[in-house]
Amino acid sequence: MNNAGALAPPERTFTLTQMGTNHLDHKPPAPEEMHKAMELMARHSISAKKIPYDTALAYADSFGPGGITARNVSGCYTYAGCGGLCVVCPTCVYQFPLSDDCVCGFSFLCGVPLLFPFCLCERKRNNWVTRDKHGIKTGEVVVVDREMGTHLCYGVQCCSSTMDEFPFCVARRCCEGKPVKLV
Image (cartoon, rainbow, N blue to C red):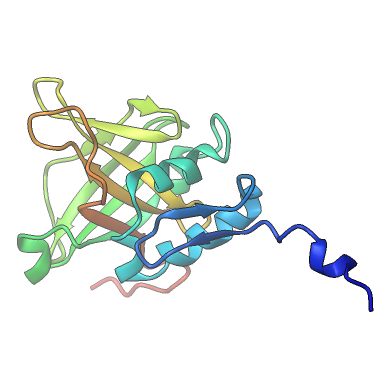
């Protein structure tokens, strides 16, 4: 009987637990493995809200500088999990790229366009930084599924510059490839 197989090193794996934390055995995962695991979580509503900031950041950074651009987050999006009025009336945003680094959008509340356009042009690696009217950082927008454009909104913890561990909002592309009847 040959015991050589019993002495072989264990397989190197990357998994995301139910809470979204990384478990690494021996070495970091290949980017393809991490991309598949993250995209699987991002495509499920409940799981996406459990993706920690550090894990989302690692996913976005794995594409290298400029690997995620405004084109990856352009289109019509629904925002979920934001609390407040979003629970009663869905918020939709049409986002469009002005450049590779700058994405702008118009919001719709219950189908009614709001006259408050926004632009996100400040980048931190592959993320967009949000600031209030006084220039104080309020959060970051992090892409967690480059193919589908799903992105998460993370806030800054109160009275600090530390990012919240979990997102307060999930943005998913809608109407992609579906005919939309205009009334």
